[in-house]
Amino acid sequence: MRAEIERFENYLVNVKKSSDNTVASYRRDLIKLSKYMNDQGMQRAIDINCTGLNSYVLYLEKQGMSSATVSRSIASIKAFFMYMLKQGNIEIDPTDNLKPPKIEKKVPNTLSIEEINLLLEQPSGNSPKEIRDKAMLELLYATGIRVSELISLKLEDVNLHMNYLECKTESKDRVIPFENMAKESLIKYLDLSREAMCHGQEYLFTNVQGAPMTRQGFWKIIKHYAAKAGIDKDITPHMIRHSFAMHLVNNGADLKSVQEMLGHSDISTTQIYMKNSASMRLKEVYEKTHPRANSIG
Image (cartoon, rainbow, N blue to C red; front, side):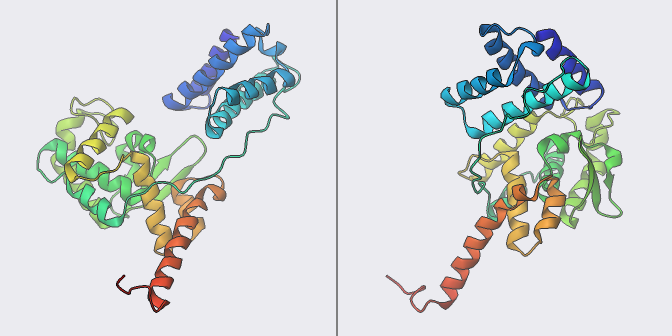
């Protein structure tokens, strides 16, 4: 089955143009499946049936894996067998009746507007690195894009005249506006830092050696400035994305627009931000209207 997985990887890279992280995720899930099926005497994809796959899902759940992890693994398996079916390697898709577990959607952790402002104020120096860091943080919060999308941006994807960027993904491209503070930081970066750092690279942002920025590299940048700001939270790039969405919804943005900016294929994914927004509005109404809400205890 390893050879079949390798062919699927090549398809993802060369045909689907999937990112390195996406390919690595599929690989991990499918190699784990392959090891389990080998132990059950099923060494080729054509040998695997619905019963075997259901047993594998039960095995994952007994291992204590979260519903989200199991669901991701099922998605990888479904994509693999769909590929095998289209290639004519199998005649029946064994994943037809394979259903992911229900995932309880939790309200994501976010930063307050005050914490966001404090974080974005931290890269305040005039070194090329700090000017770059400021531009990256401002753009991340201004657009809510994923960190993988941020580090994949190319110079041609940014329109400074119209204040928007084009975010190109596997599923579809989208246009996202950004505000003037992000624009000012970008202009400063392009005028004073980028040429010295990028060394002819097509990517908008690179590391100090001029190589493409990595997810881990940007993660370290955020951790550094969060510590510098004294923000006692485990801040991640995705938390800034969540904060972008939550702040828009709290300020009255319609859900459909937020969905489009975030690039969610299903609006139910975006609806999670409404829960916290509704709770905050109820609290505000209560504090404004209950006669004892602001009394001193």
